[in-house]
Image 1 (cartoon, rainbow, N blue to C red):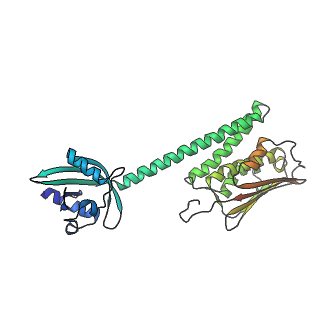
Image 2 (image 1 turned 90 degrees about the vertical axis):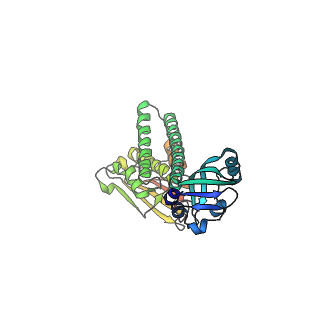
Length: 314
């Protein structure tokens, strides 16, 4: 028993029918109770013992029948922290008394990381499934609305690249969101080539949540693709201005895409998949395209989620 007293590992002895009889240094350090505070107290009351998925009464019955028990317990420290411990318990008859030797190991941090890892795995699985569903839908709809394999490859690769660019920003932020200015730059800079006058991007700092960042990247890609084929980016002097402004105490975002200096444009005779992506893919938004003589003006009004103090969405 002298070794038990000196051990830095939490080990204590309690009477099966009474209170704590021995409380070593390791127990003092882990639980915060001094030896004097612990002796005589019933162990389950002192540590508020919880048995995940069971009860302390069932633990006692198993201990009485089999002489030993091992598993995870919840113990509460003197300062109120709830610990998860691995516990090895053995019933030791001592004359007419039934003494219980219990050793514990704090695994609170390990369990916390296991839970976090499982949450991350579940989140990753969810996002992969969602991304695959988006890619499959893009492939089907692009194939349905193209007239040749070359056209399909060009359109589909462009949309995949836009999707990948938005996802890269989200990964860099550990999926907390994508900064709108950076998202726009990555989708549009290539169209302006080296002439920075052709593309003007301005707006206050805004971080789009993941469920908005990905489709918004696709919307910008479709607007830029149309501008390159039929609008301001199809001529040497055409210009595009992309601007945005927050409103309603940060709960709404107004975005304006304005083309100037391109060829005259007219509303399309029929709605293609690109137009559907622009007007229907952003959740909680209203999109309107105005085909003016000097170029397309696209206005997008987006409802933003309210951000909690801890950084999550309400």
